[in-house]
Length: 343
Image (cartoon, one colour):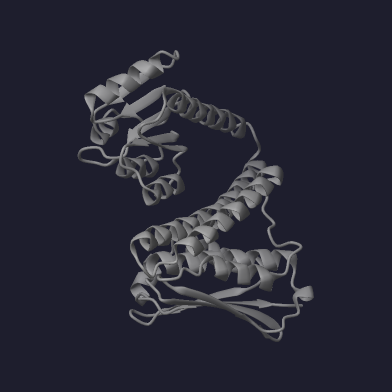
């Protein structure tokens, strides 16, 4: 089953006829509100949804959020004639399987729909199999899925955010005589190359271990360089002489992921001009600190902002025996400190 939501009658009819020509069943809706009123809930057959981004009333992105909150398990394909990088990244991070910008070919749409249906079919198959398993096995499987979700969020999503920011800075540089267009583009290409390597590694063994055999200080220095966006903010890294040979592979990995998340949060939400990343040896602990001079936030806002990013950072610190602390205040920037004992 394919659900099509588009407020343009001609586009809606064209997509409906195209999908029906492949032998798939289709239901069409002129608005997001109509889709939600239809009572679509737990799907008994494999399905996907094709949503226009710019719908009248509730937008396609808002509908995606409503679908997620209602726990309707349906892969989403976005189509738009007005998309941009920011919109595409937002949609994909929220779980969309494809983001097609008009004009797109019939083949592209059909391939996206087939991919969505296959994902839905696989999810139905997994759900059926899980109900037959003993609860300890189910629990272990869910833990593994949670770990993979965290890796995707802290790895792939953060690098995509960095690429988006570098490209946005390059776009601004086109019209600015002082813009560093070439540097921003080079950094975006380098980040994309690095993320491609990590994604392939993750797909190969279903677990990311980016820094198992590398030097943490070198990884953090490269991270700061990737997030150094001339004309917007500067990102610097400082480190002491560290006993890295005593630091476990797991500790290196988790500290890098925490640094990635913290810098991403500062860049997206704090409007800083400087982000400082430091790694110090304070025997018997290694101390990672990420500080920005952005707008900060109040204690009340801190308590209500424990989203996936902050939860992940706290959990990562705890998994390596560490402790994460946040110091912030409105107009006073933010400092995130992680202290990890070293045997």
